[in-house]
Length: 211
Image (cartoon, rainbow, N blue to C red; front, top):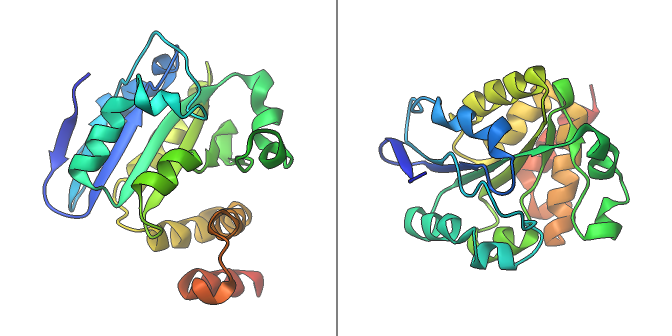
């Protein structure tokens, strides 16, 4: 499917789904039916590829079937980038395993409501195409789980109104405090940052810890 533009101006958000294999069956319709944000622009690619399966952890993915994503990022320079994926229930423990960072080189996903998982995008695209201040996330829907899909759609509808990483952290600390703390820690570890490098996030983290 071609890139669809909703709204106008900044901030710019880019949401993509149906990245490989049959994931489009659970993810693409969310972006096909999404409405424009109240402010700024939302660009969506509801379906990247529905045949080949190359893991996004493989750098070749973005050179091959994911090239349209890179083209969109380079042209639009989004402040917010979201990927929608889906997973089989039997793989949930692997995706949320604390040792995932040692197994595959990326942090474990956090579990939200209705078996929705939240994590970062792969290091290749995060570090090469986005500045540190950008918000880059992956939402994983449990395949064949209508409640998981509905929950993701509601979260995506909320995230489309956000314009920065700070706004997302504030939202997460209010709704999912434990998962938000993990997001902050993963971000710090990913970039090798200290607390003083993240004054806003650290203030939010400390405020939540006092509750």
